[in-house]
Image (cartoon, rainbow, N blue to C red; front, side):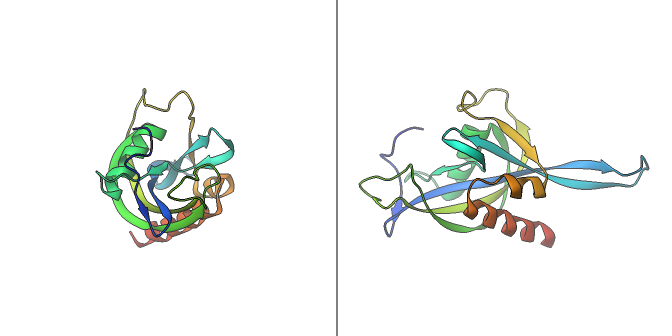
Length: 162
């Protein structure tokens, strides 16, 4: 999808949806049979500057926030999986997405946890995006935006309850 004709707005904010894609990796300590599952998070580069991001984008009038989050994961990161739970809403100011409906660039993101089951070889933004699987601490250090760090902390709290 391209363009902003179907973009949702609420109270002067552009509504976006995204996800924190994750998977489990086996971790073996001292080559013994006792293994633990390590959570890895998928982040993507930003074509407009340094740092890494979670896939997110405009939530359109003809889809739910969940559908938009899944679509963005496919378009930007080239992954499919199971949308697990809602992590939270996060407000931020976009420097690159100011328009007539939202001249201040205010955005409100609905973020979800996405358990990745498939990495696509071909996806819409593969020419401008690079995927990186990171540990939790690496992801925190790599986050481009403070609001994504907050979402990551909430994701960590959500994971601890599982």
